[in-house]
Amino acid sequence: MTGSLPPEARQAFERFVTCEYTTVGARQQPITWPVTPYYRDGAPAIDITTGLGYPKKADDAKRHPSVSLLFSDPTGSRMARPPLVLVQGTAEVDEVNLDANADRYFEESGEKLPATKKLHPPKPMRRMFSWYYTRIYVHVRPERVFVWRGGDVTAEPQLHDAHLEEVRSGHVEEPPEDHGGPVPGATTWDDRMNELEREYETAVVSWLAPDGFPLSARLPIGVDRGAGAVRLLALPGGLPLAEGRACLTVHRHNPDFTWQNNFQVRGNLVGEGGEWRLVPRRLVGGFELPKGVTGRYKAFMSRMIPYRRRAKERMRSRTG
Image (cartoon, rainbow, N blue to C red):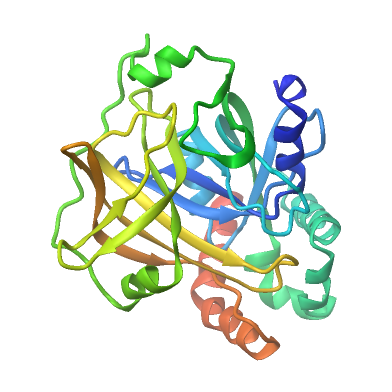
């Protein structure tokens, strides 16, 4: 259906350096990470990829194929007035030919992010990092697309391939999925929560719709340490918020993507008196690329042993 979408939405798919990809974990937990989208105009799917040593983004999609992609951070896109676009889609995991996937990734990432070519180690050394360069692709076929022209998430979106009334009301013809119970445990608060207060004015908030597809929106936030919660300072137009498990994700990168930082807060979305807040239960750090060659090298080396072990285990399971 991508060929029938507005041109600015297709441009976002093609030109955004990152989008926010949401899967649903085993306990019905929405999990959102920034990823690089790969798309050519008119293609039936938007592709994302992950390394063999950290395959959870693919494994969750294989178990629960209803996923979403949110295009909300235009940094590096060179688009003057980009829209905000949410894609709810069906995922297909591609790990049949890992060698072909690795070649595709090296070529395609270099085309999209030419400044990152200098970050790659020489070819003979890449074998040390096979857990990263051996890639699993996830093809996301759009089922429902929301477009907020001008990027105003509080406005009414254009909706493609579904009835807006059905989405807003939360009524679907299929039986609603079990969304699991609230995330148990005590409120989590640490230094990165303080960083959230200091450094970020907006965050991506993700939750589950009744039909099991994730919903996501980039919203202004306020950190309320006294209440132990993150307040949502605006509500998304056209998307029904729902109490329950949710994920709040922040990330930053420079336009050429030679550094990035990101982390997420998992917890419970709670609505009271017309106000909504996320009560944190767990903070999870992401795969970050620090500024400078030394920092990037340390980041890769710190992950090499566990990720390499995981990649080897997965290769053994494939061969039998």
